[in-house]
Image 1 (cartoon, rainbow, N blue to C red):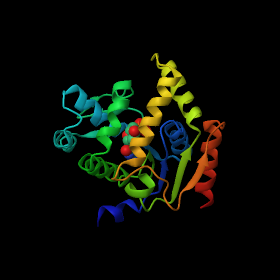
Image 2 (cartoon, helix red, strand yellow):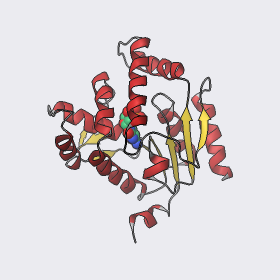
Image 3 (tube, rainbow, N blue to C red):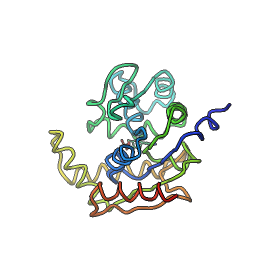
Image 4 (cartoon, helix red, strand yellow):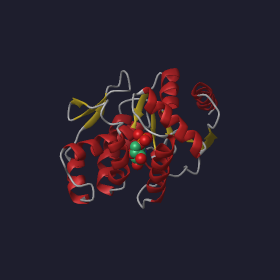
Length: 227
Ligand code: DC
């Protein structure tokens, strides 16, 4: 039996959207309500970017970054859905830094890096029902997902959420700086040639501006139950 056939035995919910749209908070709540595993694919791209920075590999060197990704194993603690392991080492607290956030869109634009991580993501989906969040889940990674959601929110609101998250994590940043980073990342993620950020043709588009995560998660769960 092929990987695609095995994956179809389980339920798949795809949640895509730009930075700060609330994907991870919402996806985690949806997974909890449904009893599915949560998989944060952005964390996997961040893990490769982090490893490249630590090993001093030039981000512009596509071949070197691709080789690095091909030789990297990224996995999650399926129990808490939070802890990320890179080659067996827990790197959860290291991958949200400003340096990694800036490096990640460069790394994520390389087809060889995406190929490796998509392979790992589909392997995870073959193990059980999942809620997966990212940029290309509904369009590319899990094209057969039962429910596809594209979350969005105004740029200002997304920047404000990231800014508050940073504050909570004890990171000093200005709102303007966060807004600029978000705009730059959206540009790179949407304009890249390979698997760019865009809603799947059959995705539900939800604007979360002004909505609490709890309410958005409830809406998604009701869509899943209805479908
Ligand atoms: O969701 P996040 O901010 O942790 O994602 C980090 C980066 O990884 C984001 O700038 C784009 C990239 N990414 C991607 O290209 N494809 C995915 N499925 C998930 C993330």
